[in-house]
Length: 418
Image (tube, rainbow, N blue to C red):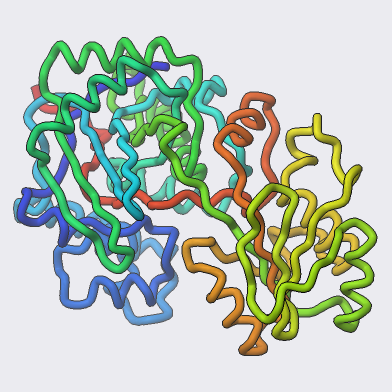
């Protein structure tokens, strides 16, 4: 893989916690407006600039994208974001529930994305790609990183372990999640060269989170190359910012389903229909977390059930067909409930497991939803297997936690000053 160091644009140490934000796509405009309230430094003013307009403003209007540029320029002019004076790599650690994962912040090569060496496991939507393209194009920067995984590599492990024994640039616990975020710079020329060489020996990177941001950044790079009559191939726009973690360190949590109705079935008729492909076991009045693949947790009318897929319900050699999300989509949502397209059907909603089973139970008990289905999370090995085979996972399959904080470092597409 081809990666390079870069002159990051980042906050002074005393402002890092106030500037850093959750990614643009994990909260809506109202939630971002609330989180940024009273904090002029919040990156939400750049990545979700609609918060500075009246509620209900179209977040995709030209004025909103223009406001992002105004704020980005102001943050830099006011010294809230400052560009490093030389190219370097960065190390970004996240700690959740006592477990820490260590990522290297690099600039990944657009050509590797185009060639399929940066592998994806999800489809993207054109409207979402276009939104992020406009943001990258207007700001002329990758304001937010994408989230990659790479096969574990001893050289990178050793280098990261050594650098993280030194004093960090940033170290804070972010609200509301209470996850710790720690950040170091790698400025030693020999270590920079070792990182570049180590990545060159890795055949593929895998997009964990940020498929739309990756696609948008690559498209902007291609666009800029086409528009530049003096294109050389080493310009900054040929690269986009990514945080790369060893695959073994990543945590994937469950991504669960809520359904508004039972397609005209009574509770008893629905449970009888489930018995065709699942062993159905009552579990009292709580929603439990599945403990193994092919086990599902159903919550219906105040009662919990364990659903265990029967032998023969999937081909174990089929990397897509044997996923729990495929089983539940085909044998429950489609076959019984008539939900054919998870991307468009308004009867189904999705909740990341970070919210806990209580959120699923609450939405069913409130009457908003008719039933909840909790899934066992996919593994990183399954994601890699599917990406390597050129297949795409079904919608709403993976949920990685913790999410990257945006604003700790930014990559400018403008050529660095000599």
